[in-house]
Length: 296
Image (tube, rainbow, N blue to C red; front, side):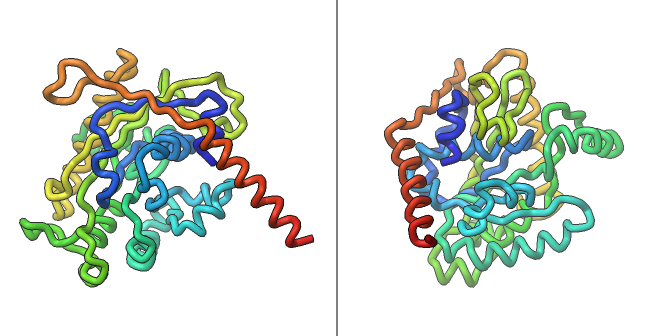
């Protein structure tokens, strides 16, 4: 439904990098840079041609989404709405762990999507740059330094014991469900033309000119992700430093750079079936009519 709003307004997506369809049947954690509320809508469009994983996902979203028109659907779906800010941080991580243990495997979830920056770019950039300067870290303009908390909770809770024995979490649940645990990290970078993101109001109402959003994927095996907090922090920082480089290249050239081993970057234009979208809209309309008749 959300994808159809943007599609009919002319907001399309071009994908770059690794082909995530190859891991759509495995459990994965999706790390995404965060610029605006439209990031969630963009990802919802991207997921439409990724097989059954689209209905086996869990989203970690800012609590503001709870009050949007699809907030109630997300609540029923079992997504987690996280409150930002230092005052709420410790409590939210405890609630997240409890939520994952209760719902992730009992509802047969495959992918979990989170935005590790902990807020929108425009709101966090200045604070992040000050922190980077104080701690001798790279100066970033297109992304902010990510926060460790939610990523660490997800890894500890959902990653099965690996061959090297460095990662373990949620053992009782994993044994019971015979799950292999998280197997991949999908590092996802969203780039908007001229760095001008789309918000959810624009996505719904379509009052911006048709535009193409670009999404880049890079897949990492979970065994390559360190478990120790300091090493994990460094690994996570490196992913966002790479995002900065990707976005700098995109804003300068209009394209993402080629993957290692490629001489030319390959892009894939995403298409949606208008027939399928009409069917979804018709189902929603008929469902609404049925509810009204029952309540009359």
